[in-house]
Image (cartoon, rainbow, N blue to C red):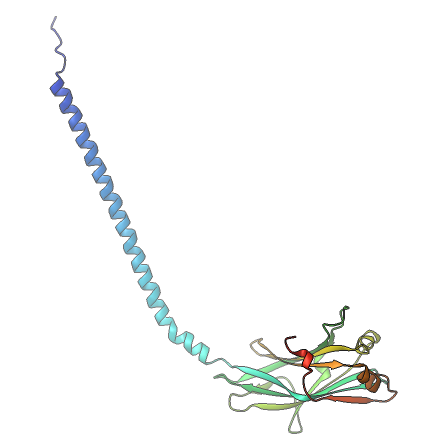
Length: 231
């Protein structure tokens, strides 16, 4: 029977050193792979950023052209504002002017008009809505009806009137002293809304003059009420 010779301490140490060396080599290989992956990710990110910048630069001329080709319509209400009331048909009316201009780079088209009258000082819901048929526009004696053009070189001054029959609830509200807002909207073909607002106060004296009479009466508001500032 042969005797088994136990491994020497030197051979054990050599084996441990080899294992340690292999582990170190594996760790270095891992680090190298991770580093290459990270560098590849950075390169891809830089390429994507450059592509985005170039795409933005190519889009700038079109975006600028789109911006420059848009209309810039503005509406300004002209005083005085005339309010009238006819008790025979419970008909309320307003007369005023609108100045419509276009500061853009393309003509605009107004396709719809509407208006409403409301007071923020009364508790109940008292907004009175006027239908498009209640509004009439004239320019130099000629009827102007939607759709009408607002050119970039031809501002328009429109003589406007509103006439509508009102119900008892609306009449009760108008017979109370309060600050009122008449808002007139012009809706463009691109669905943009352009509005002018007239703010005025109905006093007890105005109620007696206009709404308590048995015949048609009117009153002229020459300017916006001082109480309307900031409202």
